[in-house]
Structure formats: C-alpha cells, structure tokens
Length: 242
Image (cartoon, rainbow, N blue to C red; front, side):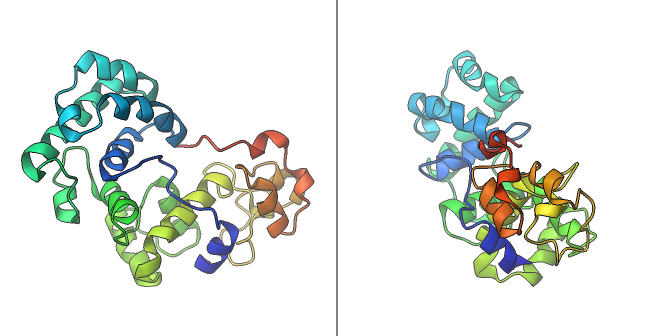
C-alpha cells in the first residue's frame, strides 16, 4: 500500500510554503483549524513584516492580529506566535531547535508539528499523524489505535524510517484528494484492490471520479482505470482542505 501511494502521488510534498525552519514552524502552528491554502495567503505578509524570531516576539499585537485574521482564531494565534518567537530567542538563540525534545518544549508545538519541522526543515525522518493520517491507517486496518503517539509507533514499525516523511506527505495527499472523511472515492482509487475498507464510498466509476480533487485528479482517475473525463473541471482546482 505504501508503494501504491508512492506511485499515485509522485508530487506529494509539504503544502505549507516556507523558506526556512522558522517559517515552517510558524506556518504549522497557524495551520490549526484552517487550510494550508489560507495559511499560505497570509504568511508572505507576516514574514515580510516579521522576518526573525525576535521580530515575531516584539510584534505589535494589533498589527499581527490584522494579518492573521483570515486564518481564524487570530487572537489566540497571535499570542501563540509571539510566545513562540520569544521562546526561540530566549532559549535557543533565535534559531529553531533540531530535536524532538526541544521542539515540543516550544509553546504551540506538539509532536505532530515537531515531526513536520524535523522532516521538512532538517531532513530528520518523522511521521506526521494528522487527521488524514489517522483516518487512512485505520481504514487500511494497519491499527485500531486512536492515540496519535500510539499510531505513530505502530506505523513506524511498518514503514522504513527513511520513508517516514515522504510517506506522511503521500498519505495526507491521498486523504485530501481521494480518501475523504465523509465519502471516499473508492471506485477511482489506486489502492482499491488492497484496501479492506473498499466500499465505504461509491464504487462505480462515475460517482467516484467526481469526488477526486486536486490538479492531478484526472491522472489519479486514469491510474485507477477510470475515464479521466469523468472528473469535473472544478475538481482539478487545488484542494482547499484542512
């Protein structure tokens, strides 16, 4: 199944735009309860105004709130980002730390966020157990665990460590584009013959193809043996999914 995901999503990557570890850390904190697309709309403005951890720590609260307002919960997120910047300056000399233990000691940074940072900013393999990841590995029957740390430990035993970061991207891509929470596109899924949950969503080609999302939706349909013309043009727009 991991190999099938790699074949289905060769374009899988971190969908939070960033240039360095600090930008990725802040973007990941801001991504709570919103979409990566929305975060990517505000972070260029945020980082142009506050390029360093010290700048974030000393920001004008009202000004930052105005920038972050489109992401929702902007007052709480402003407080989190300012505290994050302060902690990075005071405890790590203004540089984002490179270990799990140090990262999770930062305000607003849990294990999921730390794995995103380690894997994508520092090249340290990590499994990002978000809602998509949890949903899919449970549908795959890889685990019945519901605790993210326990899920991470189970999957770590099943997937090669060197693949952890890319596997996380691929499974999140699949969750956003094919294996949706309410109605998975079972009949247009390249993992259909391998998946024990096949049939949770429509299995006929036409209704399943209409559920595919993303710029490669028609490629995904073709890879699953489904007529790509069944995928609506609107579905090919970049997915806007939390």
